[in-house]
Image 1: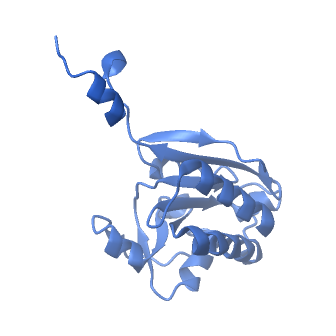
Image 2: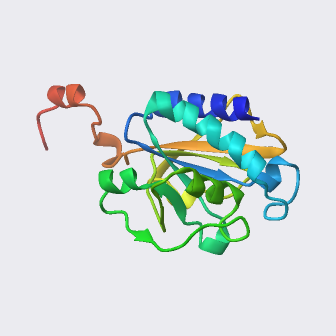
Length: 187
């Protein structure tokens, strides 16, 4: 399981150009990983393996993970306080995730970091969703679906996405500076 998560995340980092300081949302149903219906059989044991895999990739890529809580906490996110320093527009809220209100993954992450905080919303650069937990609300506006080579962690379906800036302006718009230098006339 941990090796699958690690490979999926490494592929996402590569495909999405995830760099130091970027935010990656991790949505996980540990129940779905075990083949059970979401929210019914959460387990810290599964969370422990997933957390370890994310930390391993994080050490290499330098991104900030944000662990999505379950719907009982309105899908708030567990982050480290260093993320709040880097992104001061994020506003922390007061809550402690527990397995039955927050989910096993988010509550596990909260207890692993000495400086864990919870925020209600975030605009991440990428994310992985293990078990169809619906992370889309936490991604930046233009999400690009990403299909990792491994499509399941345990019994849970995996989806992923990275984001890109909006392309605006229509058919005559130019998106790279070199192309703009060639077209300096206006009608």
